[in-house]
Image (tube, rainbow, N blue to C red; front, top):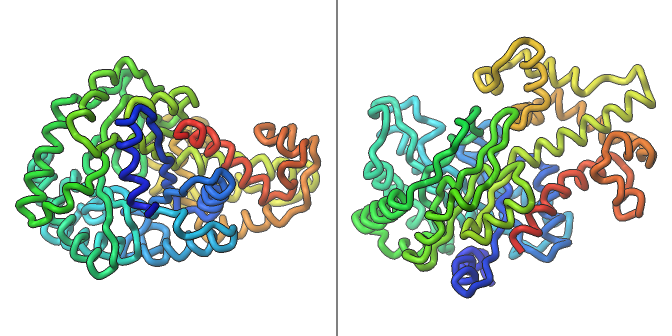
Length: 420
């Protein structure tokens, strides 16, 4: 089954009374991508790997990667792991004018069109069109009609590019999610998307696609993004309450071929993830939880190193220096006194530290950490208890790199069980 057909099959599975889902891994970090691809290989599933407009675009994004470069990174890792390319789906998330919203709308949309074209030509088959962000000359809040009209214009560019690429991308619409990069703290009660809003979103996009001359792409809209009532902030998690979302699920019966896409499912309970899939939220996106787990493993290994070599450099100290030297990626996202801010920089669920792992000094520090000796079982028990059983039973190796991958896969395993 072709990758796009796998995504289309999600709604059919629900209609047949056997709801299934797919895990969408939203991360550009090589170790997270490797963990996701290894999990798919061993579980016999398909890996859906997505990049956001801020991470990856024609200008390189904050990762320095273009869509083609990101694709090559994923495929290189897959080749090394022995995972066939037909077991991988590449997706583009929040594709729209967000990276250039400081420009006038005409200029920002031109850049967004170039980005969408680059994604499709690079072989990305799942495209989330998100034009909800206002640009420099836009009103404070865009109307839903303008958002849909701009999305349709980007779809037309994607369709033209797909003809040259020989692909048939599938589309995701809807914008009821935090801006790319994560949310701040949320209100005590999150508002679940109103079913009326879902119907209106779909009507406006159908009409806009027809006006833009891409009516044929309507059949390839596979999902709409909604807020099911799940979110996380710096130190808080809003867990899924299926009763609160009960009015939303029946809307899918009105739109054959459609499922819900749930952003920000990070840190949800396993039972909540399974309930989301059962209730029609077939695409579960996860990102910060995976880099959070990676950071946990890094810091655990650093603690092991400090036990063995008290004079060794401290990874947390290195990262603190980098974050304080260039605070743009965390300042404004965290609140509190000096102690609270220091804790948040390293341990926040929002995981803003993830923006610093590709800084050369951080890469060098991590490479040195991962090149260390195998870790004693007793120290794994002390500092990496989540994967102690696997190490004890010789299901995984005890070298630092293997331990980090296993730690990340522990999170992914919860998702695999939820979508099965």
